[in-house]
Image 1 (tube, rainbow, N blue to C red):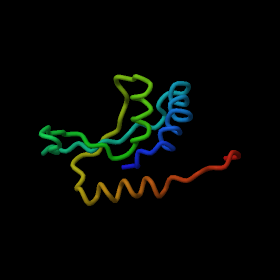
Image 2 (cartoon, rainbow, N blue to C red):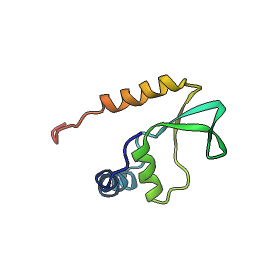
Image 3 (tube, helix red, strand yellow):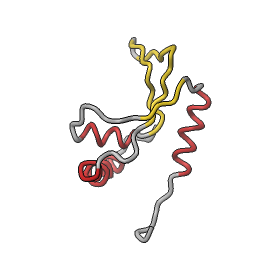
Length: 98
């Protein structure tokens, strides 16, 4: 998961949230649907965020109560780390011309 820093929050507030407000959520977050569930603070969750933390935070900041999402089913914990790493490694900064 991306580290929650003031710089990331600024990017979410100043760039991502306005973009989502203007154009909508172009690429929805991705969730792992785990049939066994994941216990966290005494609560069992069956959905785990794989990719899209910043997009999710932007939607929350905009007060959106429902957002679209994509799912994957029962991904093993070691593969989850690989998927998250792959998403972050393949993301590249584009120039203004692109």
